[in-house]
Length: 285
Image 1 (cartoon, rainbow, N blue to C red):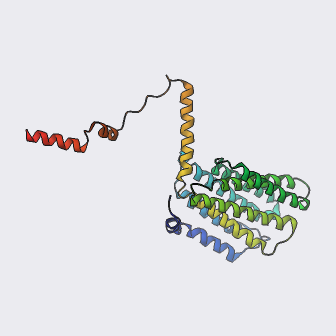
Image 2 (tube, one colour; image 1 turned 60 degrees about the vertical axis):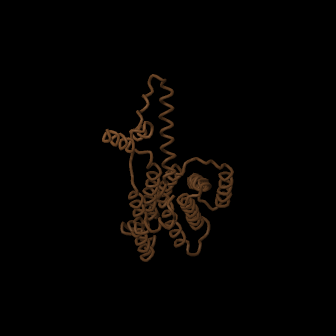
Image 3 (cartoon, helix red, strand yellow; image 1 turned 120 degrees about the horizontal axis):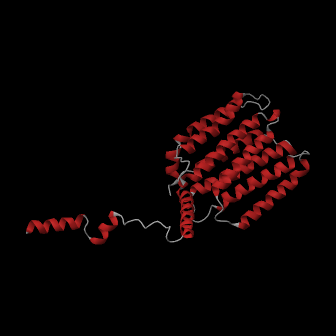
């Protein structure tokens, strides 16, 4: 596992575009009432920079070893689409924005996986999410919004559960990054929901966007040194292939590969040192 200090030294320069575009967003601080393509671009640029950061760490559309990074990248892409929709919220794009972010959470959920399960943690987080939704329910407008918000709450709580369940032994910093990112995402969306549906919060837009960008940065950083997750995905694919070969019968199973040259050298002693001794014996004769 790469140490956090090494990660900061190697990944810090690659995150400079993200930090610059985030600073530009907060400096300009374009009001939500003046929706335009320029304000949409300014809001989406930090997430697009994180997409480039994830893609720069290696990407393949087929290899199982890149499945984690692919799903994180897909989540970031749908998050950028959600940001674009929320800029045009006044024109009826709030529900499509929720759909985009819900899809992003589904990709993050798929990336974090289902093992280890840690069902008790899931029950605690699920009960907490249900209690918060119950408190907010009287404030919700009539129509489809209560059902949409319930589905969204379920996705983000499940995403938080899977991110937190992965943190344990052995401890890895990239899994902790994903967990911190998920927790910040929950805090950001909760503040947004309370501010929109229940009561106005002081400095809510600044809190929502700062925690949101930090959350996405932490989740994007989790792709660095994620070999354990990629190895688990590759092992699952290999197990599926072996299972199919076993079901097909012994006759259809491929023959075992021949031993590698390095292994033969170690077994028969005819490697580099054996060849030296043979040449020495011939020269003596």
